[in-house]
Length: 220
Image (cartoon, rainbow, N blue to C red; front, top):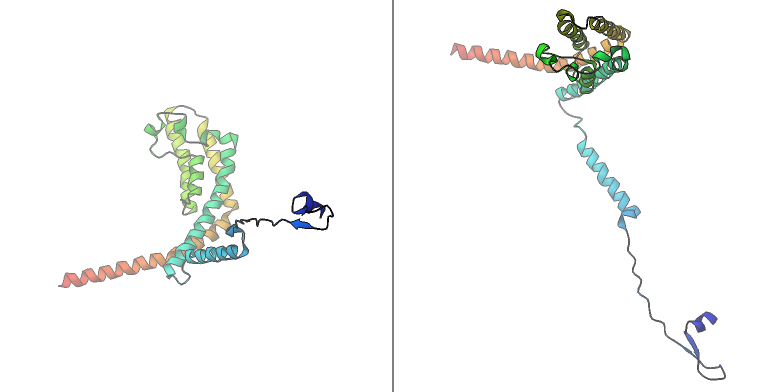
């Protein structure tokens, strides 16, 4: 009552205090802004939409055998290149092999005029990350390329004669790691070969059909 009197809602009319006048209060308009994104109903609807989008983006599980083989081959290629990158990375970080850690053209401007197919540990690591190695033999070929390029540019021209022995040490270190991973790498290459077999069989059948069609046309 005291609060009401102080706010002017109750006013004394006569001296007796028996008659009071109550002032009518104005209704206050309250606006409430709802953020629908915070409601449980909106969140549930959003989750359902996202789930449907994910289902649409999933690969067709009933796809052709060639599609499944291609996905399997891709998985094997990833594992192969990851294993090879594990070999390259510590060699690249080894100060002993610093001369082969980056492209030689960074330090020697005329390098590519002499060497037509440069190779270094940085480039090998990038090839691993791009999944460009299809076999261990491809990896070994790049190791040999580092050694042969060093011989061609340095030893053969009578300069930096200490580099080729280091390049051979690098090659031996990498080959040793390949030997340690031999069983794992062979298993991955076997999976890769099996995955690529359907594609090779398809190409072979197509070649036979083309040859048969050519013979028929020749008889005509």
